[in-house]
Length: 256
Image (cartoon, rainbow, N blue to C red):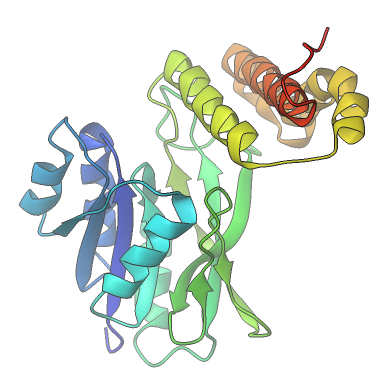
């Protein structure tokens, strides 16, 4: 490729999933950069074995970690991936073609599509989200928000890539529950909303989230696994609202 890319990944105990991420990324990236926040499972060794440059940075938040990686990269074009994300072969080919000459835009969106435990590809209509993951750091940059790790592009027009990123977010259903709960607890700790708004939202959080994930996110097409995932998601998001409400009330009373 004519234009060099640095692939940046932040990690914490991702030894079992990082290899697939980096192998796919190496098909398009000239540099693999892993910023680790203290793994104890050999993540750093896996990264180095695959040719990545590994840096340590104590955890300060999602946006801050990714901003640090962006600044430490050797190239201006950044491909930002999580350790549980794998570029599909179609997306690899699309990126190579795009970077064969200087891309006309400053940033490109990608579809990140969830793959449920036990599967190798997404089910029909699988949930996903469309966000910027390939960008020129001279014209776009990561927000340093501790929770919302989003790339700020200002008024720059955005491109759209058609290939998907396979998102192996969960090792198992139990891992899914634990991961969602940890993230929800972190959100409840750092985010704030008015108590009245949270109190009005609390009774509806479970049924609305369940319906959203079953039908709008189409988890119903993944059978019993999809139903369980939707149920767990609704429970965890309800607990987040509950904890945020208690915090908004100053911990003086318990929500019943």
